[in-house]
Image 1 (cartoon, rainbow, N blue to C red):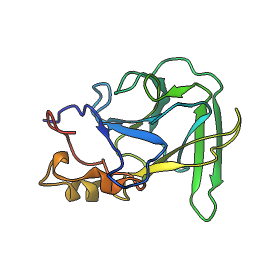
Image 2 (image 1 turned 90 degrees about the vertical axis):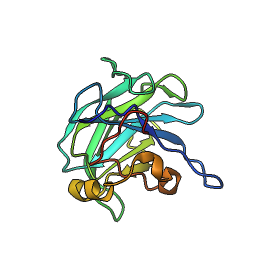
Image 3 (image 1 turned 180 degrees about the horizontal axis):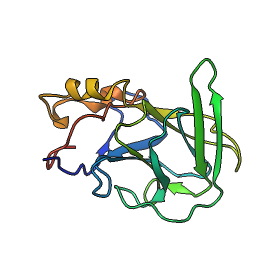
Image 4 (image 1 turned 135 degrees about the vertical axis):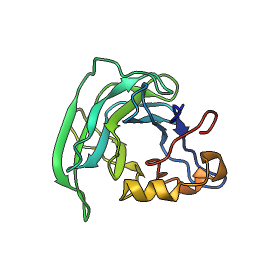
Amino acid sequence: MTQSDNGHEQGPGPGEPRTHYGWTVHHPYNGVENHVAVEVRPHFGFVRHWRFVLPSDYEGVVKWGVGEPNGAPIGDRLRGEASGGPTQLLNGPDVVWFGAAERLSASSRSAYLVFNDPPPHYVSFGEAEGLEDPPKTLEGISFGDSHDQLADSHDGHSHGEHDHADHQGQGQDHAGHDHGPGEH
């Protein structure tokens, strides 16, 4: 039986550069087994014009928006919604971006992206300069190329048995494995 994931937060290890955002993956999300939520919030201060970036061919998005930290439900209202794409990143893949002007904070407001399992190959996040602009800079996490390969690679260990700080910057693969009670 799959247990609820209370969230898996990533952070830099000693001596590693600090990122701008804290990332948490919730699976299942709000009690729905096939829903995965990525929660992002700034480590310090505020973010105003935030954007998620996904592969343009991914069709599993269920909902996105803002809510309280730690896996809370997404609110119904958003101010200043913006979106764009598909567009090609410089020497990179075709992507779509979307977000809002709803203020995020380190302690009280997070951005959420909820999608069906299997997840996209990656999720990126960044801040735009203006209300209708695409993100200027990006950070991201990777879920890998194959959901089945990821499930196989996580057989035989819990999250507590490896150091996630090693994955900062590239992200941690979270697809294809379950969390038991007390495992993060």
